[in-house]
Image 1: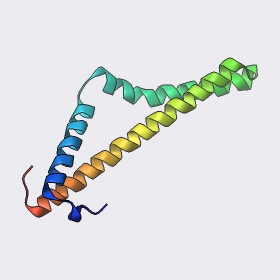
Image 2 (image 1 turned 180 degrees about the vertical axis):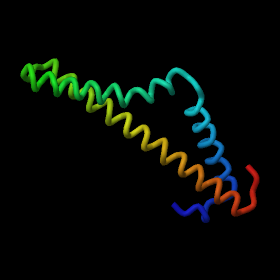
Image 3 (image 1 turned 30 degrees about the vertical axis):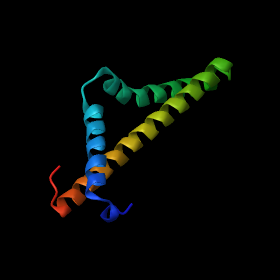
Length: 104
């Protein structure tokens, strides 16, 4: 995305929204702490389901546990990937604002 063609007002507005989002994500709240453990719990559910299928045979419970683990790990992965994209974009916005000599 070419930030050089954006207006100053657009850059400052988007930077403000992304900065507020990043501060909200870094806040020491219960939800933010829980989100870090979500990936581990999903991996544990997936591996438990696979292990139970291997030793006890496939059952609907084991298949459900495996599917739930896959869905949880995937959602955690996508969320973490989006967080990294947003922080990288915020850095690019701040670099562009600094290059233009604007204070934010």
